[in-house]
Image 1 (cartoon, rainbow, N blue to C red):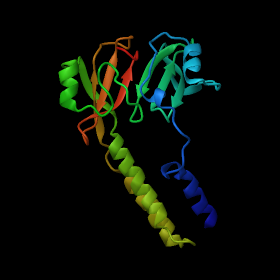
Image 2: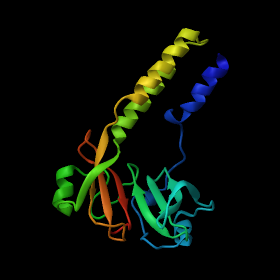
Image 3: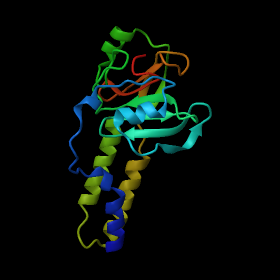
Image 4: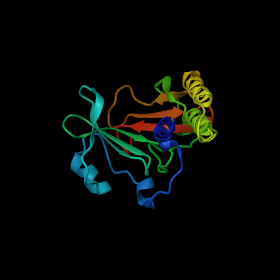
Length: 205
């Protein structure tokens, strides 16, 4: 039973808060990349010694590798030639991309960018995902030690209910018809009515 509990704790370790090293503030707003830039430029900017991770499911002609800098809220996606293909920005990143930042309200996006070229279902809502993770962590924290078999079953059932509940989805607003250097997409959260994720072909679309 202790082994099972240990596995559960390991499974949800990423949900627990932990001490983090100091974040270099300049990376929270600065972004010098554009579609076609080499991996050398990415490595030099972030002083990255590690190689990018290969994507499990590559998109032919677009994305084959990725760098994720979670402390800065930045993903850099690279094509098969190790050139920048797409950029993704999340909550830690504070700089504007195309005049819009993560956290910008829906009405302000329209005021700054106008009507999007296309709208469609975006990524799962970040706030909804946080709530799901919080419920999982609370269920884990509520387990006694040692854990009776009945409690283990209740724990698993709670996880199943959380994971099978209907997802809440962002609304994606795209401001170009193809992924080019001037392409930018803003994912708006229905929970906060604000931008939660930004994808772009350039830091200055």
